[in-house]
Image 1 (tube, rainbow, N blue to C red):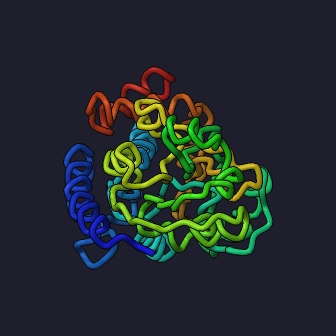
Image 2: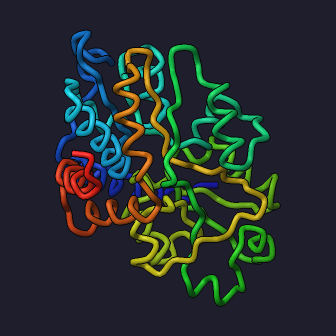
Length: 308
């Protein structure tokens, strides 16, 4: 299944890329869970966390700054990792505010969900969350997994949809984060929903530059990139349509603990009330293209929206 030579090269490079991403993060903690996996913040402090993903950190910083502007004390715990790492901390009440994505989080708790539309997913997520956690109002902005090919591959093989992939006679290798293999939309989902067999090459940079390079140079034919990533437009990639909704809507949604009161919830909701898909794409470009820190990006955006 996995090309071990490529896996080794890409995984090593992936580690370098992750280090670079953390260095650029600006406000990130170098080791968020070093104190035994939880916050040491006092009872008057709200802990705001983020995934090890630059876009997620930007959203977390938006929440953190607007909370501070309302008088709350914030402990930033950024770059924690993926769901397998941070969800136990969130469920244990050690993190109070976390930007999440509706569809993927729903499938984490309910792998057999039949919800498809954004409204259905939002309603099902509220029911699926464990006691003590609340989903606030999702933003219009989304940043979901998407499967991409090069423009040349698309044109040469008349492939513009995931359903078209079953007509491709060659070998398909998918470049994606390691956790993709266990996701409902990963290789098993592609096979069961679209009848498409793929090999999988893990690239551990969160759909970043190494993933884009692997797709561009032909190391993989298919790549899992986040839909708000500036890399898609920069490389003229073609995002394949998903007529069967294998990948659920992934609207940005704040998940909060019972410690987050109405005043804090309203502050967080004020961010998501204005955060659009185009806004998120621009914020991501400021991070990846302009190399601005999450703190600067968040402050400029909130100021422009008169939220600071």
